[in-house]
Length: 434
Ligand code: PMP
Image 1 (cartoon, rainbow, N blue to C red):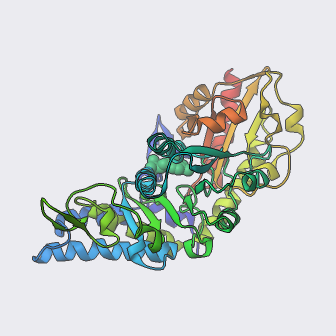
Image 2 (image 1 turned 60 degrees about the vertical axis):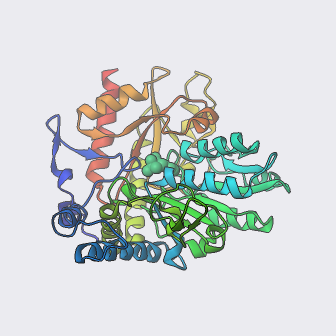
Image 3 (image 1 turned 180 degrees about the horizontal axis):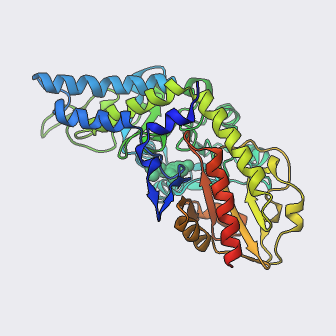
């Protein structure tokens, strides 16, 4: 039973007030709130178990190690990896991608090689590749986006050459909510014998993910976006790839033997995990994954889809509203109502197709001008409504849309129809103020 009333009791922060209004937290794309179970697990571990993991002979160390390693198994099961040695703990998606960019670059990239990314990537799936390209003299190729806010798969196929070494693509856009056909993206890359990294930061919190079914070679996500703690994330990699990559950082844990003459490295996954891991966070991440699994990822997906659909329907009734992405929900009236500011964004949002997730980016115009997203976000905040404004760490996508930024509402498993109504009502009030 998916009982929002019960679920919300697990998240004490949701009942606090902001500027004397009930908090309406719609910034889940940035980070999610934590259920009591997660916070209590962390407190309990610090109070009762805390000791450094691995190689400890004493009771607490063994217990902490057990919690840490069973968390790895929990992550493995959650994304259906073949083996827990394919699960690397990192600080988050960003570190996962930087790890891969460094180590894959060292092993496989030479001058003039090519890496494919997409137009709708978060900066953390662009900049590490640019840095690697700079180090290695390699070249970034970009999958263009259609006017529907989907990736242009025909153009994607044309990007491959015998220089292509890796494809890096987001599963779900953190701006448009577009769910990319990553299975197809992987299949096409594999036809060219090119491995694929999927950025799962915005998919893992919202839908079941099976890395074996996707057949991706690497997959990254962050704990804090899936109701877990900050400071922990995951890089999944197929064993046959990880085995061939050199270590990322050097230090304790990642070695087998060290001498001044020669150092040998540890086996997977420890080869990539230098230093003391955030073992309290890894345990708490496993508790978060237990939490969402108990609710059911399918149920969470259904709930958020319904909420998103409802929100889109309501938002579209606001005069002057432009929604980016979510093409199948838009009406052709929107095109007619576009301002004469010459934005190229008119085409976004009045076509069909484009499956989408619990993220809605929008702008509102009044008297032919967009209300600045920062103004809209700030005034919504005064009503207790937390949304995000700006470029959402996706400046190339903003350039493609021809806008500097948007307001973004992103939903989580605990959001309600009443909260969507509060958002819609809040936007209407803000429009009246202008
Ligand atoms: N990729 C995507 C699609 C994201 O939405 C985010 C976070 N906004 C990241 C990567 C980076 O995640 P983190 O900051 O947790 O490393």
